[in-house]
Image (tube, rainbow, N blue to C red; front, top):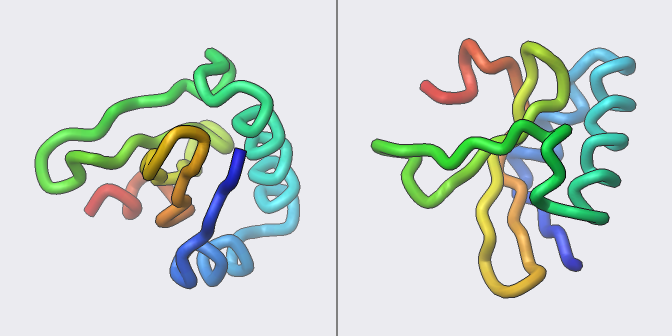
Length: 86
């Protein structure tokens, strides 16, 4: 599996608290092993975010991503769920 990251994602990850960064890395490891793992709580997004999906990092933080090809994903954004969907 390949995961590519937008510059916005990388910048957002660096701004997160250290503990959340560590949890994001753990969730990415789960995603790499099985992108459908129920522990990720994946949601397919609608409306202006159609074409993207999200998974949980913590109760409050999400990763927005898209499947580009078979086994190729693009992580668009990471952040607080209150703001990430705006």
